[in-house]
Image (cartoon, rainbow, N blue to C red; front, side, top):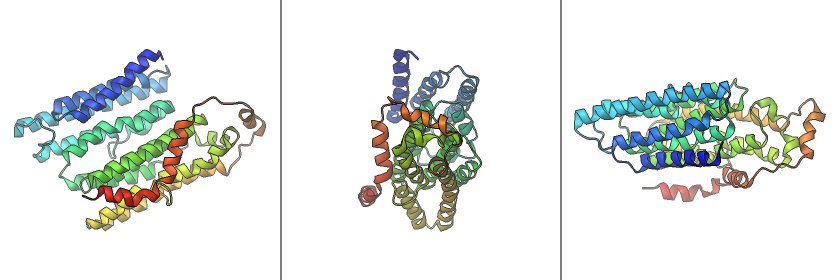
Length: 348
C-alpha cells in the first residue's frame, strides 16, 4: 500500500477514535465510530484475496448494523427525554439498545460470531489493530453511559467468558484462537464495568499489552496455524522460550501480568455479593487456559518432523524491528508486583 494512503487511513483511525472520546453528543460519537469503520476497511481489503474481501464485507455489515442501532437508540432517547447528551441517559429502553449496539461493535457474546470469521480473513497486523484499537471508542461510550441494567451486563459478561473459552477449544487457526481469547477478555471487562469502571479500564489496557505481544510473536514467526508454531524454535529460539510465558499471562496465571486484572475482578465481584458469578468466571478462565497451554505445548515441546526444511530459516538473518516486541514482552510478564500501587490508584 502507498505510504501516503496508509498514513491517511491511520490518521482517520486515530481521528475517529479521538472524536468519539471527546464527544458529549450522540451524533458526534456516532460520526467518530463511522470514521473508524471507514478508515479500517481499506486496510482490511488491501490484500486482494477472497478471504480478505469476505472478512471486510462481514465486518462492514456488522459495524453498519451496530451504527444504525446506535443512531436509532440515541434518536429514541432524544424523543423520550429531549436529551442528546451521552451522560444524560435516563430511560432504560435506549440504554439497553445502545449497550446491545456497542456489544455488537466490540464482539461480545451472544453477538460475537462475526469476530472469529473476520479476524481469520485478515493479516496479523490488521488483526492486531482490530483486536486492540477498534475496541477503544465503543468502550469509551460504554464507560460514559454506565448502563444501569446490571442483569444485562452480567449476562453479556458471563456468556462472553464461557463462549470465549468453549469456542477456542477445537480451533487450529491462531487468529481464530486470538478472536475467542478477545471475546473471553471482553467478558471479564463487562462483568465489572458497573461496579468499578477504573478496573475495566485497567483490564482493557493489560489485555492490549498482552495481545500486542502475542500478535508480534506470531508475526515474527510468520505463523497462522498451530502446526506452523512447531518450526518457530529454528527461527527465534529465545523468543520461543518466552512465548509460552506470554500465552500463560494471557490466560491469567500468576506470577505474570495477566493475573492482576482477573484477581482484582474476582475480588470486586465477591465484594458485590456475586460469588456464584465470580466462580463461573474463574471456571471459564480454565477453558481459555487449556488452549493457551495447547499453543505453548505446540511451540516448545514438539519438533516439526521435516527437520532439514525447518532448520533453513535459522541460517538467515531476519531484519524485523523487534524493540516493540521486547517492550511488550517485558510488560506482559513483569507487572504483577505493581498490583498494590494499582489498587491504591483504583481506590476512590
